[in-house]
Length: 133
Image (cartoon, rainbow, N blue to C red; front, side):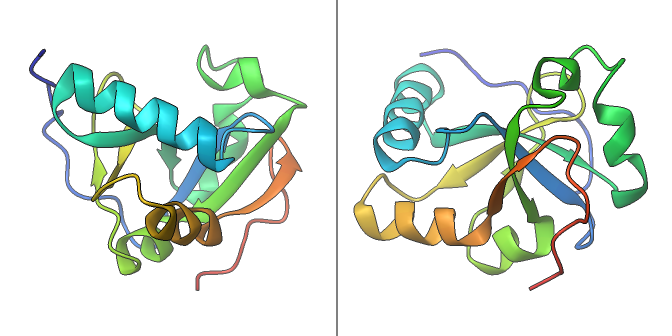
């Protein structure tokens, strides 16, 4: 097992936008597979997302090396407050703006709760942004 390195950052502000790239990336089998792989590697169930303030969403796409692979492609969008309120912590892993959404386990109940936090799929960059729930 590898040790995950966390960046020294505060938990994202409630209004921050959380983006999960790819049309099928919130299908239960896909999330379960990635979360289990993450657990095997780092010891926690997690899936990758990008977190950014609402004012910087457009900057994430186009020229940004991470977001450019999703420009004009389907993504799912949530607010940090929605995920945090549903009991899904956000860990600052990898290079900014990468985070992991942490799941308590990969049961169907938690996969449904996670999916319900997100709007979409929408074409990136997402406009308008989802309301804070």
